[in-house]
Image 1 (cartoon, rainbow, N blue to C red):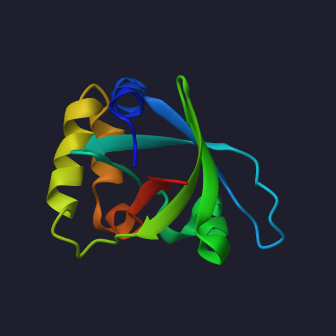
Image 2 (image 1 turned 30 degrees about the vertical axis):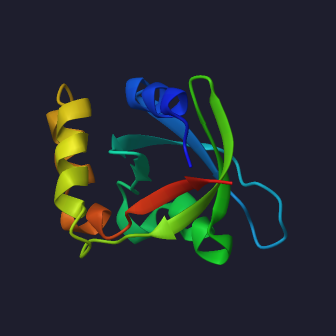
Length: 123
């Protein structure tokens, strides 16, 4: 479970870095992603949908490492996808947090990206 301080830090940090864990246990090169807080949970998406390299790497282990401001944590990545009812709340969180970037927000809330929604669970 995230601490309140970690959630605040993630919420105030625009760019998170995710390093997916490969099949051999090593971490892939960290990639910048946008992350949002919804309640006590943290979510990320691939703006390139399933073709995003970092996203494809997550498919093997569903594990990785995230950094955001002072947060530095190993995580399990749970598939949420587009159909989960929390998807609308995640879209709203993206629109609110990143409102100054309307073009990229439209991409990260589009169906292709929404289908790649992952929930980050600290390990």
